[in-house]
Length: 97
Image (cartoon, rainbow, N blue to C red):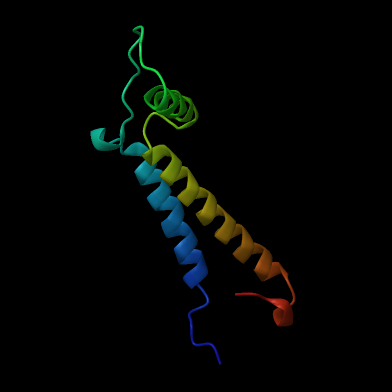
């Protein structure tokens, strides 16, 4: 018999949402991507390929990586809360949590 409290998924979902919101507001300088310099480069070969790859990836990433982490936590929390809410509507024998 499962002894876990019935509200633990709800509390975990709220905690994930709260942590995601807090992390999205926090922007430490250590996780901030540097702004690219607009100057002509004369590199060739492997250093050029590495620089081009880095610059292409930096265009996709957010300016501060805490935004991505916070957004992921918020999606997980919202998903867990939604799953729990739908679980309440399901038949007692079919509940997952």
